[in-house]
Length: 117
Image (cartoon, rainbow, N blue to C red):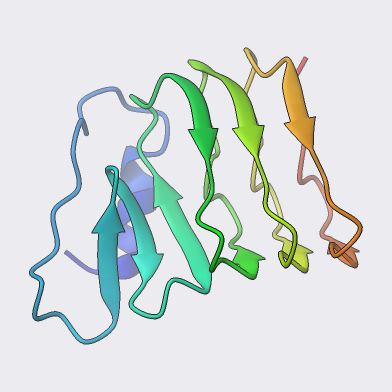
């Protein structure tokens, strides 16, 4: 599957799990969430993810649309060290009630929290 093809599943509950070969040189999956191999970028979280999610301590960038339409997440913990939150990263996360944004975040792109309420 190509990287941009994941966004076709953004608002679909039909994508329950994401799998990437351990030998893949660019991507890895941790707790069902797609990261860059070095864990510095969180790329995609399936909309089927529920409850509380803690982003890896190694993460520096939350990519555009990474959590878009994750309507069952109620809390996301962003670690110190994250510097950027991409465009529409949390768009349509309508159940979010709690999120910390650490001081390390210096860039929040347009519409990062579009239609969250």
